[in-house]
Length: 83
Image 1 (spheres, rainbow, N blue to C red):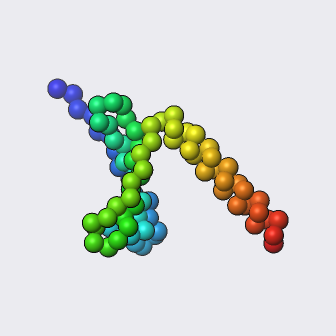
Image 2: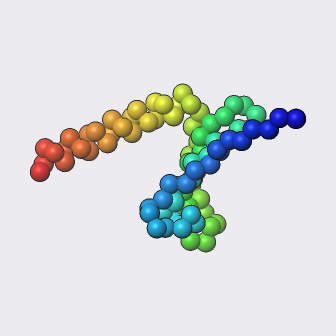
């Protein structure tokens, strides 16, 4: 039998914070037998009892990231205009 390894989860958090920080964002590759998708989870409180999750398939993620990047461009443009 041949084995392989994959990275299926990464955590983004401020430098120096522990991985269980409320400021941590966990990005996971999920698959519930209908194809892989990305799930993003952020803890909403220190008790670990409440999380917020959003999930995207690849096509939707590409569109969402395009819009998010466009919106960050708008923020930058507004900052430049008002400084």
